[in-house]
Each structure stands twice: as structure tokens, then as C-alpha cells.
Amino acid sequence: MKKPNQSKPTIKLILFTLAFLFLSAALSAHAANNNATAGLTITSPGAGGAKLAEVNEFATDVLHDPWDMNEMSDLVYIRSGSYIANGTFSNGVYSGQMTHGGGGERITLLTALAANHTALRVGKQGYAYPINADYYKYLTLRVYKS
Image 1 (cartoon, rainbow, N blue to C red):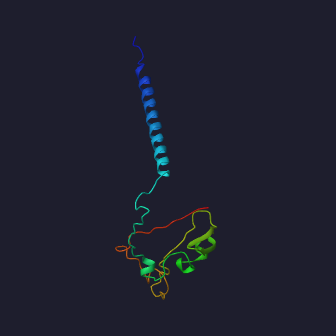
Image 2 (image 1 turned 120 degrees about the vertical axis):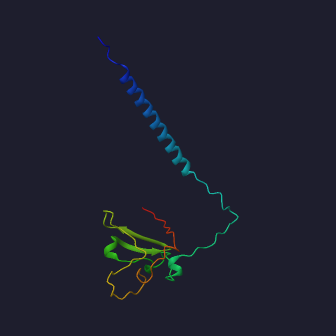
Image 3 (image 1 turned 180 degrees about the vertical axis):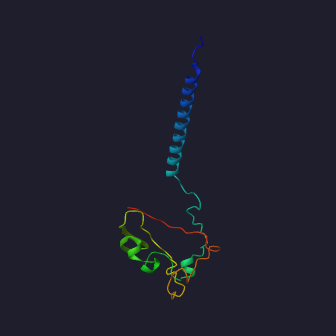
């Protein structure tokens, strides 16, 4: 009569324990990295005031109106399609309340507008002022949610 092989459950238990320990260590390391990031200190450029050169900015260079969020013309302000109500501009900050709730809210800086090729293309819109992606490579935004 053959004895049942007791080693298979033991091996499974050992593998399960090792996997659990590995996962616990990985999660601890991830938490430690997140805590370290929260305490990030910028040391350069120093307080002495290293000055960085200005870069070209599409809205200033091409539209002659920087996207500084000081006036309504900084956005393609289509109220019905943006799902943002009570929009205001104050001290370089655009504020508004989201009304849709389903992820359809949007803020538009530049749009192509009408796809009708016979339409008159006036104003700050993408057909008249396309962004040259070979020259302008970055879009930087600061967004807050409250």
C-alpha cells in the first residue's frame, strides 16, 4: 500500500507564504516611497535666484493673448458643451462648477470649430491657428479640485 504524498500540500503552503511575504514587502516599499515623495525638497536652483530662460508659448506668440486665465478669451467658452457652470476668471485662476457629473466636463483652450470647409474661419480657433507640434512640444496645466 502506497502512502499518500504529503509534500504537495506542504509545498503549496510554503509557496503561498513566500508569495504573501513578497507582496507584503512590496506594499511596504511602495508606502515608504510615497511617504518619501511627500517630503520632497527642491534644492536647485537655490534661493540665490537662478533664472531660467523663458520659453516660447503658443498663445502668446501666435494668438498674442497668453492663456493666463485672466479673461474669457483664454478659453473656447462654449457654455452648453462644457458642462461647467458659473465660470469666473480672477487673478489668473479660472473657476467653475461641474454640472454633468459623468466625466463629460471639459475646459477647451483651442478648438478646430466647424469642420465645414466653406465656413468663415475667424477668431482664435484651430483652423486659423493650428499648433505646430514640431515646435511646441509641451502643455503644462495646474488643476485643483475642491
